[in-house]
Image (tube, rainbow, N blue to C red; front, side, top):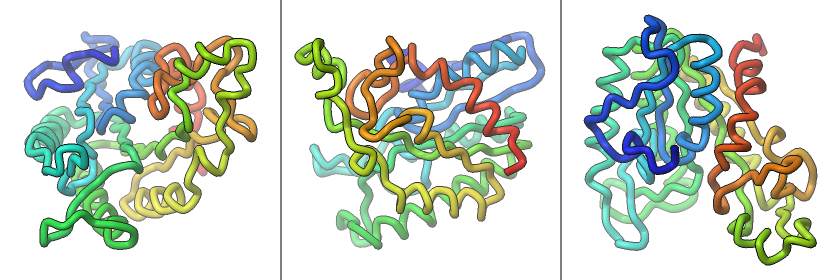
Length: 245
């Protein structure tokens, strides 16, 4: 699924689950959103719903300029993808839109300068608020999933080197998560009328955060969930989605 053309192609149908269903759900966002695909596909199959996967790697769901720090340039494909995806969602009129994105994004201010700290945060708040407003008008329910904990290691590589001591590939909770950012995500989501879901304790169940959940490797690198682990999150995600809290 991680190499699915739907994570990079604006014109693919990107439909999964029960393709005969009249009930549609949507997954929208960047590669961190794509990490949730196995769980949400399982949900769609369980509920007999049709799933539209509208994701683009390195393109944030927030309506902000996407900056590539390596190339020191804006990614011109991102606003094109976002506009196209939002237009599709408006036509789909989904029962639920699941949306999320990385906290590790880079953007620029109106002078074209790379935004940092509070300015970067302010630009994101305005941009994600615009996006959530559009999603809310198109969807019966919008679920904003907080960004996932990340590892200090490329987990598969680390485990290959430390196969007799997987604890060496653990990351402390404080390094894996960002309480300030998660609180901001929750505040913005709730202000926009979206349901906020905090997945941190599903992924980091102890301190330090283990690279394994039972016999399942949690990450495929340092910041994206493995498919074998992500699919196990379908039940807690659905429980959180339907919770009244």
